[in-house]
Image (cartoon, rainbow, N blue to C red; front, side):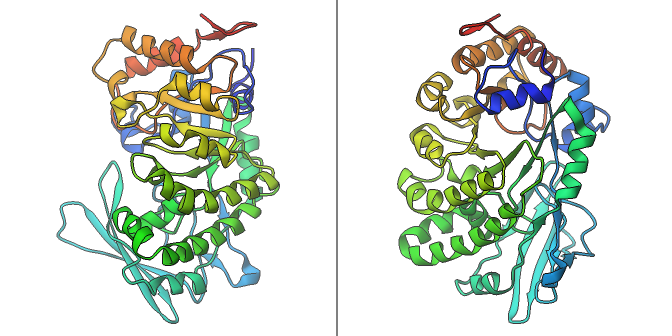
Length: 393
């Protein structure tokens, strides 16, 4: 019998483990507080005996380049790590009172001007109400002054040692400070706004390419610093490259040319990459696989707003990447019977599990769930065993 770490790595390497690996994506603090008395993610995985994922995002400044950690950063937002600042790139934050939801303005201060964004948040999530890039010349400040974090390899490896065989240690390629996404296009969408960004691919494609190059350069610096970090897999991408958001043509011109080199750099640094596309995937499956990630997620089903057909996806790209996700957490973690949840687990296994290379997971995070249904999800997955040929129960 394999350990959870061995089982998940076996699937990531497109091999056949002892049974179906079963896990979740990010666990939201509001869910853990509401349903499990505020336990941490490790407590969640132990409670349900799932194959665990431990998220570690450890950044360090390069003191030789005049970098230091941001002293005003007292908490970490979603996908955030310790921010890196310099004398030429400082971040100030102020509360905006009188709002229904908490509102904060972040000012990025440089010798040649300031940029700002406004972030709102509630107990579940955060969202941008004023994007950072307002004028096209704003990107010049990013290109000249924005520092790039480096991986704190020693801190990562300490976490890996402490976590042991309980599961895998996962991270993501660095995002823009305060609010961003791992992928180049997706990070750009956070700074500009996806609707405006799509329009600019037609109106001023040269400007979009310039901004993408600025963000890609930062991500490459970080990615090359990953040498020696004992991560098991690192997330890249994001939902704004989904086929339910952009066309295959935009993907070909503005996503793949910038993300594929980062994936290659991660491989050169000894890392595995999972490309995250929460939304439509089917029209671009081969395009995503052609960037050569080790795994792809989230294979969001139609009931969750995606378009995934697990059996077709397995046939088309299952020999190239590990597939992660596929489970409809909206309809099978709430509002159904345990038997229906178990049947959905079996369907996913039968459609995508043959030959290995599949990790069952909800198609992204969730905010509400019936704990009995999560238990059914975990129990049924552990009964999905690999025989010498095919799959069996």
